[in-house]
Amino acid sequence: MNNLDAAFSALADPTRRAILARLALGETTVMELAEPFAMSQPAVSRHLKVLEGAGLITRRIEGTKRPCRLAPGALEEIDKWLAMLRRALEANYDRLDQLLADMEPGKETDPK
Amino acid sequence: MTRLTLKIEGDTHVVVTRRFKASPEAVYRAHTEPALIQKWLLGPEGWTMPVCINEAKPGGRIRYEWSDGSGGSLTLTGEYVALEPFGRIVHVERFHMPDPAPDNMPNPTPDNHIETRFEADGQGTLMTMRMTLPDSATREAMLATGMEYGMEASYARLDELPA
Image (cartoon, rainbow over all chains, first blue to last red; front, side, top):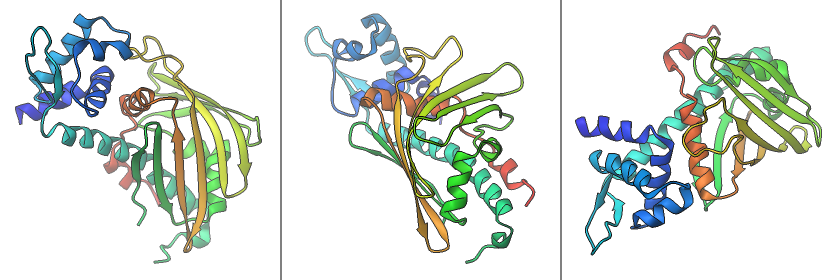
């Protein structure tokens, strides 16, 4: 459960979510990760440390490089994030359902 | 039957579908008439839309300003590209965030090109919204931002809305 808390906390940052999205494509080095984010490598490394601490990524040592990849199960976390967005949109549309019911008095009762 | 689907398609698309019990005409109107939009397109609990400009014609302007009543705000601007009452809307939109914007987020956000279709589905409507972002990084950032700005709301409260 602690790990889940850490994962959600790690996912609360848009840069870290974008890093995870990039890693979903495959193993990547810090240098390759820093490029699209217009960030310094130390800044990216700090984000990676948080992601690693949350169990979302794993890193190995290869010479002077420390390539990182998604940890098994990390995609489940991303799914949770998308599920949250789905619920969020659903809240708007639930309100719209109510409005539409009010707009069309003849259709206030569920036809099904 | 009304549940929403949200899927990522290809590198740059997001596709949202949702079914409504109402007719395509009613759903279309709820997406294009300011007085109706202001009643539902509100995001999280406690937010309102004090400014709603929606000129539903090709080239027409869109401007939504949300407020949480205590200083929080978010603005969306856009333009209509094409409208086919009551079946199809094509428009472009972007968010303008208050400073400071989240890490590395361009402000305003890159243009999101959206085609929305309303198709008769039994007695109701199937809505399909297809968003196209400039690249996959922008798409991820947009999905993140949607959540960031709390598109989440309390279901408990929605359940309590008067019928």
